Length: 346
Image 1 (tube, rainbow, N blue to C red):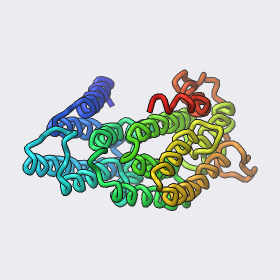
Image 2 (tube, rainbow, N blue to C red):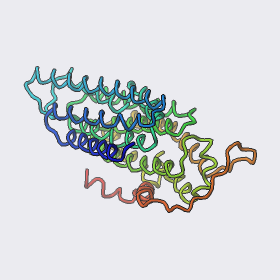
Image 3 (cartoon, rainbow, N blue to C red):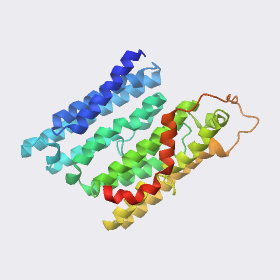
Image 4 (cartoon, rainbow, N blue to C red):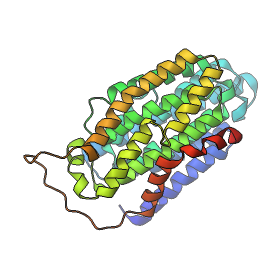
């Protein structure tokens, strides 16, 4: 793709995201979401492979439907209350439609079917953008309307997301699909706490973005897309693969790594809200995800391939690891000691 075109699409992405997260009026938020959708489509379809074109088509159809629902819910609310302000979403039916629309934007259950397919058909850096930056505007809208959303609906969708994200990731061999189901599972943790502590949802989202970025950038560096090639990638960058093991365990939420921090705080908050059974259910469902993170970690570092492998050994690359990957990996592993500061921020 032409570098100037790529720069223009990247700037459009930033513009759309900024418009949505800084707007007070529903029409401006909707316009930002549309700019985002239109600027990511060429980045998904740039390889001209039939799978990439299919992914771009699926993404466009889903996001267009979700944007129409956002507009419809805001218009219904304005019709009944006379308010176009995002924080003044008080009409019950409008809130339910909005929750469905944002769930569709994010790829939460039961609107999750498009996300793994789109991620699988996209280049790995576009997959990173889809998993991180593209989720910020819908999460920001959830944050701004959190006081008027239905907690029962969100809890139900969150538990279903955690369950399906874990279950459907179990038999995957493509790394991008595994990361897609991991994203769906993490969205469950974010959605379950947003009616009670929206700032905790944002903290969870920021840490998820940090850990996912570290994994996507590592996969991009060693040029790995499936489990069978991940087994032979350790010869390419041994130190990076070793750090990938810790980052994957952090994304799984194991102490004493960064990923344990949001899960710990969310379980604590749910217990305070007299939702201990819910906290137990979502904690047990996260063990499903732990299985495929451990499988990724096992393939990446713990196992050596047999001598009869069909894959050629990769040459060791002496190209230095980028500073961005180094910083994101260190932060993905070592942020748990800041947990005493978090209650003062929240």
